[in-house]
Length: 128
Image 1 (tube, one colour):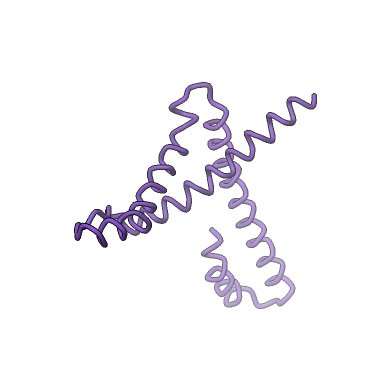
Image 2: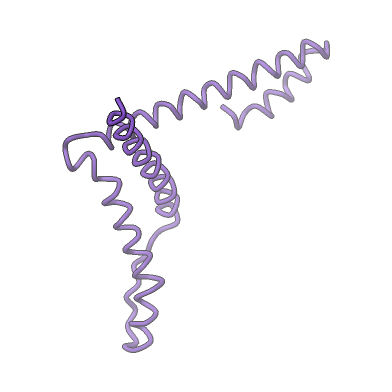
């Protein structure tokens, strides 16, 4: 929704002649967009928190395993492979498509948030 606010703002400029009403409508539009974004983030946060707190190892560990796999590919391509190629003239890099870099960024962010929440909840529960 946030990406449409500028377009809808221009539309409001054309449709509403009164300056005060126009500003009020734009403020309401911005508030609605931010509220929806907040709801999306809270939903994602709830999923990540539930995964991190799960008792089942697969559910709780799939993000870290995925991230470690990506880290292994990056370490291979940028640390190990150059040295292997230098000494053995063999290409051992693993192709990582651009959309997987985006997934890595999103997943890492979710993992960091999930782990932070998990640790915070443990500390909070110990304090009670």
